[in-house]
Length: 445
Ligand SMILES: Nc1ncnc2c1ncn2[C@@H]1O[C@H](COP(=O)(O)OP(=O)(O)OP(=O)(O)O)[C@@H](O)[C@H]1O
Ligand SMILES: [Mg+2]
Image 1 (cartoon, rainbow, N blue to C red):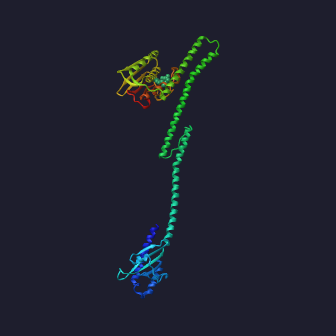
Image 2 (cartoon, rainbow, N blue to C red; image 1 turned 135 degrees about the horizontal axis):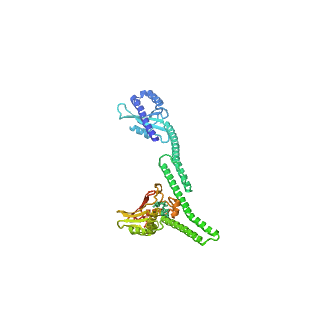
Image 3 (tube, rainbow, N blue to C red; image 1 turned 180 degrees about the horizontal axis):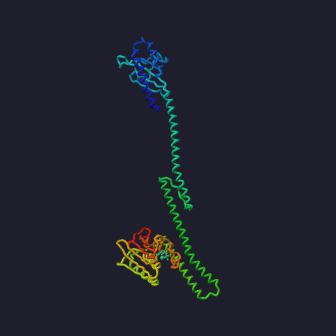
């Protein structure tokens, strides 16, 4: 800015000096000495003019001072580089190196021959005002940048608190979840990314709560299931211990009951162990090519006595041999559970039909019974652990509610699915779908 102002001032003072030079040229003062007094008063008055207000020195072509508004160098010779330049027709204005003074030197030519130089006019002016206004501007710029940075600081403080406030709330939420307080919810405001994050956190908390709830339910179910046979054993043994003169028949009867309760405990525990192992994938899948039709027939053969006891007609149907890549032991257990259920939940004299079919991709095993059926509401729940539609009656039939959970888990491990169709009082149909070719999942291989 300083350079710019100085340049401009050089230009100004050159043109002012030119103005004076032209006046002197027109009045022919440098050649006609008769008007010397007029010349002097012109120099004096011009130097005092408001728009000039400077010192004016006029030299002849040899550098001899013929007029000086301050009168100090009159009749002396000045020959510095600037005057020398002006006398060679190279007009020039420049600022003194260490002072705020501008000097402009221009040539004065002959009125009739502009190539003939008669002398030069030198204007020296104080240009302190340039520096005063520069200083003023400087302090204004400082003030402005101070205000601007304060303003930016304030704005960024406000916006950052907008962002950090919800993040801090989320952080607190996560910390509470980590300490086990799962019934948390973050307040979600707006629709931005942070709000989405908040929604995701809420969803996660709900999911965690659900998992925790089903874990607690499972534990309480297990304890309940184990407690019931144990308390019957306790009652039976105590009555034998505290009763006097117990007849042998009674001993035998009670011990049979105790024995069946122990069997029941055993069953529950082995079912639970199977489920846990399936959960943890502890038992590796032993996939081989299995003749599904032969396998199903073997299961049915084993269940014939059970069906006979209830006079239930067992029907098997298949039109071709079907082989599938499955784990024979696990799949046998899965199908047995379904067929045992069909027999168990069908009243005496009913019918259980097992159909094995396939298309190009999948095998389908259908188990159809004419039993008690399952209400629509309960159809989705029967695969849960310990779920039984009628707790008291099923206790009599000896069920624990783990059979279908095991079946479901096994079928899923085979990348298959189970479908239920049922009408209460009319019967149920379970359809198991399993791919003929096993899709290996990295971890199972
Ligand atoms: N074919 C069926 N007909 C009617 N109800 C059924 C049938 N299969 C299952 N259910 C219902 O689903 C519940 C769960 O079956 P699941 O096989 O898991 O348990 P369970 O048979 O009671 O005991 P277990 O663990 O000994 O098999 C049963 O208690 C029964 O109420
Ligand atoms: Mg069962």
